[in-house]
Length: 266
Image 1: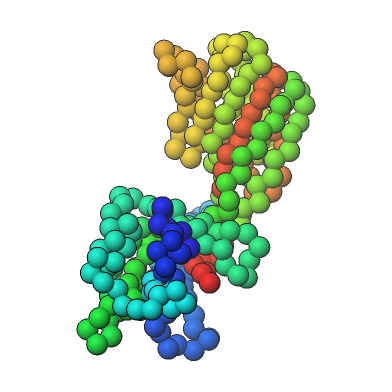
Image 2 (image 1 turned 30 degrees about the vertical axis):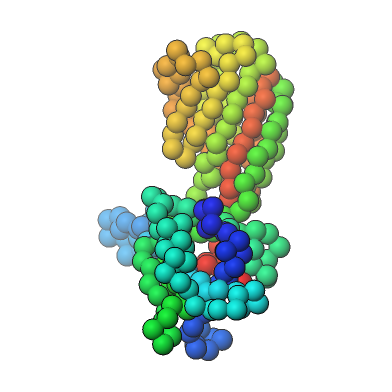
């Protein structure tokens, strides 16, 4: 396991559990939904408007010394301080990387430490217990970085293999037109022809778009590009996305997709 820049194996540490629960233990996944409905007139059956998540995933890990390489299983004061300095001195969320033995891909989480405590035996620390809060209900895939050259009028296909079938995926996108463009239109025909329009792009100008955070920038720092934008940030529906452009461009998509696995480590 790696949390931020802290790799447990580099410090002779490993994950463990002091619980004596049965193998049938249940764990909440934080995927509860709240249904949004509305009654119209005297109709006893409400109109379904959608659903939204109510909770974030929370869990606990226990760090101990790896007994295969440590002759003393107890933590010294200095060792405790080093672990806590590395893991609790970070503001916001850290990336946590896990390769569960049951899965064929590395799973990533965005986590923050909300509580730390010790497990003691005979007054000596044998484990450091960390309560984790995740940024969402999901784990995340590896980072995908996919580039295409789109010819005017042609269609490319990009696949969003998200486990979250309710919502759009909002990628980071880099657009490099191959000529000066009066009006660039990028159309996702799989999303009811959702059209992104950016005007007055100069030859050689590179545009970056962070759709999740709704940030659009040009490498030309003197330009206020939002004045030439229709505010339709590029987004991907679950499954296949067929995308067209009215001009020749190079476009790069950068994203991770949600994984519905809860918190699994091992």
